[in-house]
Length: 146
Image (cartoon, rainbow, N blue to C red; front, top):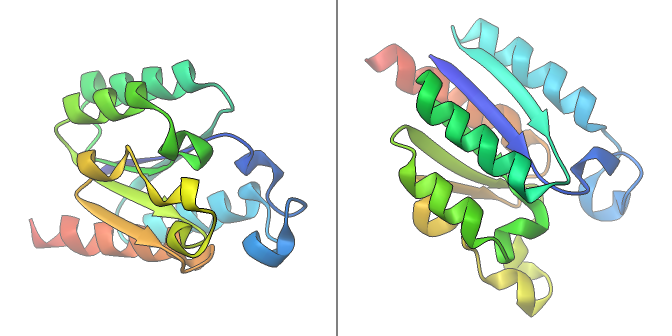
C-alpha cells in the first residue's frame, strides 16, 4: 500500500511555531517516524509539505493518477478555506484521512469549519503529533486485512 502524507501551510515551522499547541518535534522528525512505522507495517510512505494551495491540489491529482492507495492530509489553515483542495479530494478514490495535531473545535471559531472533512473517510484531531503515527498504523492494519 502506498500512502502519501500531505501537510499544508506553516507546518514546516513545527518545532518552533506555538510549541505549547504543536510541541517541539519538527516536521522532519514526524516524517522520519511515519516512514519508519509505515515500513514496519508494510507501507510505502511519502511525506510532503507546501505553503502553496495549488501545489497541494497537484499532489492530490498526482495521487489520483499514480494509484496512491491512501492520503493523509493536514491541510493546516487551508482546511478552513480551500474549496480547491476539497474538490481535488472529492475526485480521489482512495482512502483519505484528515489529520490535525490540535483539536480545531477547541480553538478559534473560524477553525470549526472544515472543507476537508466532507471529502475524508476519517478524521484524527487533537492527539498531537502521535496522531500521524497512529493513522499510519491504522492504514497498515487496513492494508493487511485486504
